[in-house]
Length: 246
Ligand code: PEP
Image (cartoon, rainbow, N blue to C red; front, side, top):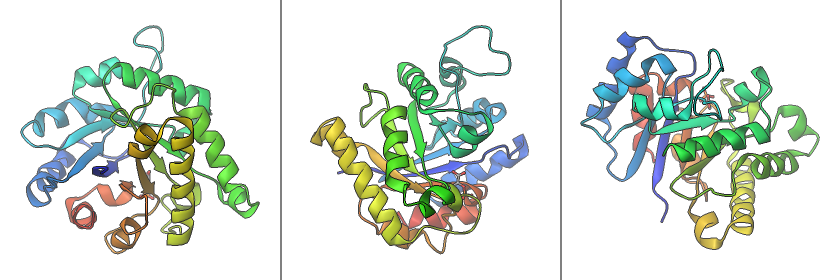
């Protein structure tokens, strides 16, 4: 039985004053049977982790370097994120793959660093619209999954998020058939590569314009263990109904 997860991604949004939303989420939508994770800009991780330390909510980051320390101006390591109170980190988000030319090998190295620091790696995969239109969705996602997930992955240390690039921030969601097809494919590929135990226990999230009004239908799709939520994770008013639909 996989534990459900609702993960928020604030992207490059949020100031200290916005952390009040975390108190509202913790107070109004506790989810004893699910993991709640909010991935924040690096500037907010330490204050946020202090603020929620008496709740079960986890605070996460949105990227890390593959090295633990060194001459990497502007980067942040998994060791530093864990030290600041993070419990997880999003890796290989399509915005990072596009804006920072991150490939599977880079994401895998980052995931190994995250694992070494005790962080859950939320590894994102997803096809562009051109790739879907070309009928290449499963090839693209399979290749991303194989390259990005380390051999050392366990169900406790890795979560996979399927995020079609064309559904992120667009208001356009994949159909339940499209989500079901990709999630079944991901599950089979993980079981093939690891084992029925490990591959069957790694959680699979859907991400891409998940909102209060579509969450329940997405969560009803087989092999969907929760969601990675961007825009609708910024306020408790939007995020709590999604958590409630888990
Ligand atoms: C995301 O940033 O991972 C995401 C899914 O964004 P949105 O929910 O806004 O589409």
